Length: 112
Image (cartoon, rainbow, N blue to C red; front, side):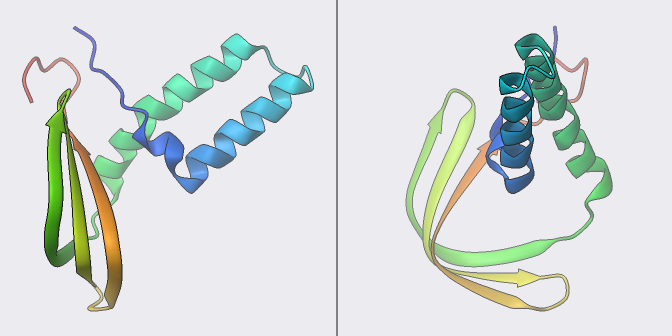
């Protein structure tokens, strides 16, 4: 069974830039829409792998849980008055934050 790739990273700044660029190329006739779609699927597959393998930074956070949901194997948490502490000991404050978490699966695994 193939591992599902989530489209969460498409909403990041690099994902938005990729989508804008692909749309521009499709509109100019430089690439076919099918090629742009395949590139997005590849982006969806590769970015989570890179994040898991290459990013080693850690962060701790503390806040007040406002609401939470679990639907279609996706957790959503809404927090208020959140304090983030990064590896370099910098602190970042946020009034509200939304966290979306999906089940992580390795290729070939049936279970998380």
